Length: 264
Image 1 (tube, rainbow, N blue to C red):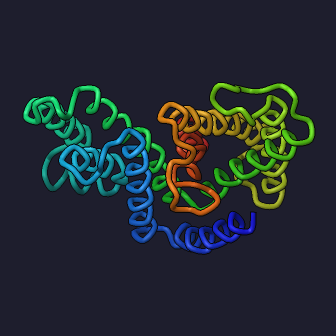
Image 2: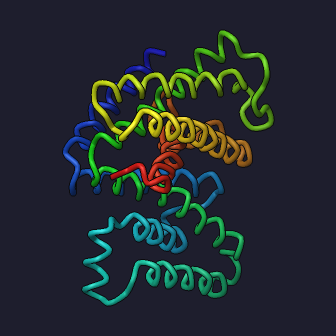
């Protein structure tokens, strides 16, 4: 437990100043974090990022992560859209399944492409969310932290019915609901002192949906780890696991609050 707390404090001491600063330092930091996440995911499937297909997968990720401002500059410079760049990389990846004489298969290419999408979409929206304001990043983080805390404490005290034992044996229905309640309560407190949404009603609805989707994002990563028979995605964060173990919910919550047009 002490190691877990110490790791969390060190991570916060590094990450939060970058979130506050924003801009280029924050974007570079997210590129680094996302790259480590991709490394972890490929390693689960016994694939190396330090290879031709690993490089192609990273290029997919790097293109996905390009903020809107960068995308506009790139399109103006080379007259090629982000979608066209992504399409070109995928076509090259498919050609590589032939030139590698099927050592890199179509199945490998599909896994690589979806790995880049899984990691890239969420972290792209983290960069975009910070562009609209620190408060939106804080709101998303608060939902995840309070959901995790509520699920843990309510699950330990009242948890009886298993939520999804085949994927995550320790999670309970009571903890799932408790996480949503905690998230709503704490975001309402923040809303009272520092309004994030235009009304409490909108805040509560978005928070409930985000808390549910965040917990589903957690289950997605748990399913991945169970499929590949690994305990944690990595060991970069002692007591916490890897990057994907810490950002699994955020990868789903951030795109959601954009899709709901809550940000901005």
